Amino acid sequence: MLINVDFIYPVGSIYISINSQNPSKWFGGTWTAFAQGRTLVGIGSYTDGSGNSNTFNTVEYSFGEYKHKLTTTEMPKHYHQFPYYSYVVNGGGGANGLPYNIQNTGLVGYDKAGMQNAGGDASHNTCQPSITVYMWKRTA
Image (tube, rainbow, N blue to C red):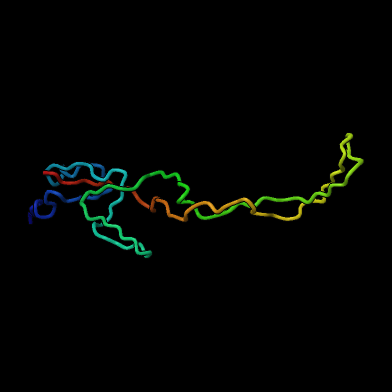
């Protein structure tokens, strides 16, 4: 039984394979490499759970990035502590002819004085677990 390839793979169809040969060899028609270095996402809208809506309603809309350096607003909120020490200052008899004798009594604790929270807790793009295949789009 001979199957009409125009019925199975009309112009605009995507063919996915692990074979690197252009499908025109088997099916005829004109095929071009498609979505090189990209994953496929179904067209539509979604809400991310926090009330933000994102719409992917344009065919062949390309988005995302391979490498992303976090901005300040994308970093998790955090603060930095620094150690502080206690000192005792006694007048007179200091070392090296100084008028004061300063004695370090040791580490007392950690403080966040003078430090402010940084970062805005926004998410950043990450690459999803993926596997590579050959993808072809029929153009004629």
